[in-house]
Length: 158
Image 1 (spheres, one colour):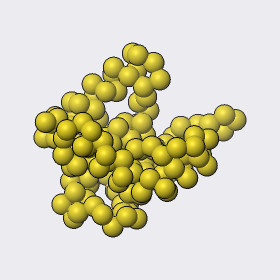
Image 2 (cartoon, rainbow, N blue to C red):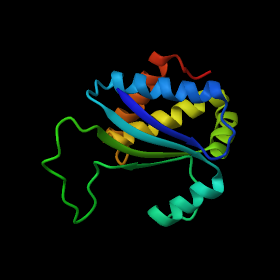
Image 3 (spheres, rainbow, N blue to C red):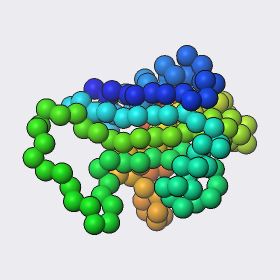
């Protein structure tokens, strides 16, 4: 079961789109056959806030569409935590999506706001689950899986 902690700092996402995000991420967790209790936070922000997050935590001085911070990714010189009770929820991490980029990219790619929002949520969700696109092989795997999940859920490209 996926426990989504959701916050829309922009107050611009409709109740229907918020519901879709919850359902889509739960669907994706099932699709990836994730088991047990899983915690994840998703925050909708504007370009100014995601720009600041990008600059502060990634040293990239520009806004982006989605940023993921995976709890399970170990940084340099970090040690994994061992000995936690088995019944504790699995903490995936935090996702931030820019509402401004979502709108602009939906228009640019010629599909709905809902489809772009879902795409960005799944893209970030896959990053939280260890998928990446740093090389051609990994990119092909990740982007193929994104499309599979979105298509199976019913958010196909127009």
